[in-house]
Image (cartoon, rainbow, N blue to C red):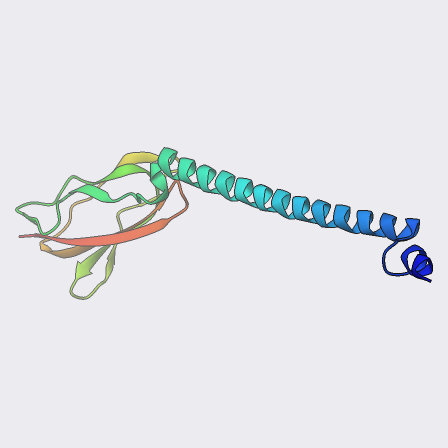
Length: 160
């Protein structure tokens, strides 16, 4: 009877049981290896994305540096003794001028300065000015940077 138990029951395993145990331990090993491989792939992907983002930020300084107005003629707050012969805007980087408006102050009535938007990118733009009467003026401008960012500004000057 002891022989029967060892051959058919507790002590002995059939060939199909041994194969199932072997397959199940092999599956656990393969499953663990697959999890490790997924983690390695995720780490590599994260590292690649991080490195490419860092490089793009380092090599494209224009990402966060928007262009600004660096000089205007007449200058902001300037009091002129005669009408200016021209208007000039100088920016810190290349832009396209979209809109320029000159207004009498304080009424805000527009003054015709024959503005036509230039098609080229540049840092300095100049427009001729007709004779302007003594008054306070508001000069408004709108430009678009190469990054597509729209910027606008204004300044006042006066003629006595």
